[in-house]
Length: 128
Image (tube, rainbow, N blue to C red):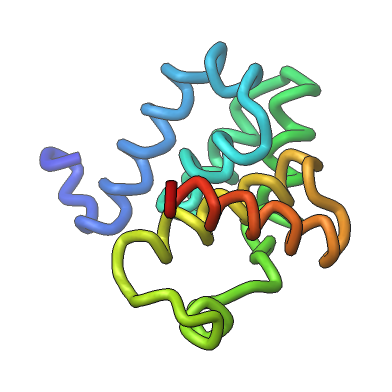
């Protein structure tokens, strides 16, 4: 990268793509929530380069699902909802919101009602 005098941004993309290639066996077995967590900070160009470099149809499908669906998934509950419920702002917000997002991604929650049930369980667990 240095010898070719590539930009820092392009160097970051190349490094990220190489890391994905090294992790390819692990990535193909991850559930959507963990794969999304792993890829959410990866430059899109690195995901695309990795997609082009693999012939594994499972990995290609996972990458396509991440790029087209999973990276946009958000719980219907947000920080304003939690504050309106009387929950004091703090690290608990991130814990709750991450758990709700993961539940949506992994298919444990498919409706707003199911999300609310899970939210109540998470709040009870946090209190007790």
